[in-house]
Length: 215
Image (cartoon, rainbow, N blue to C red; front, side, top):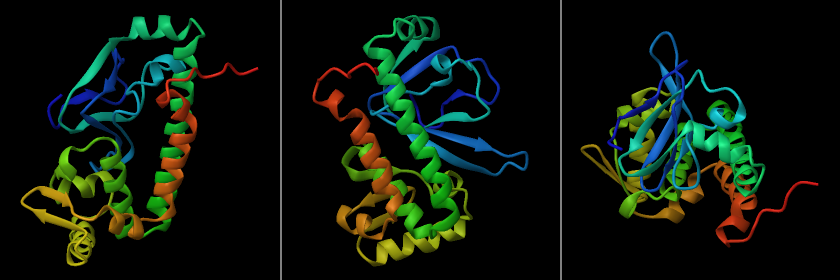
């Protein structure tokens, strides 16, 4: 999946679900004015297209490839059939959906109450967690500003502070993370909330243990 590929647009019928392996997908909403902001990101921990098994089939948001890479693509019919078996796959998808709701909720709170530097630190950490290669991200400040829903000048100032502190290095559309611990120190609590909830909900899957059915 190349950088910038649109997997689905607002109101369109979803034909496939995507399970990223090395790619990272941004779920974002575009206003009538053209302004946009990311509501969540999906990497190797999740699936793009939850509305398929939640009963909606469409969504008012968009899904765009943020980091080029690969993913598995599954026809909507097959996903629905497997989900309706009410077995392991259904329980796993529902748990992931709960984790995604946490991410969306925390993103809304973070964008309202925390500084651009804190938001940028949170966003970079989550991107790294989704498997960004070699801690180097290929993206411009304009793209990051669009993701966070802030002005480019705000990203320039925040990135400048992080670079001055030796935490990142920014050059010609590339952001290299030099010191992860420095990012964690500058991020708000929103990063830890999202990470902790994701680990809580999916930790047994990562240890290859079955998810118990809800009584």
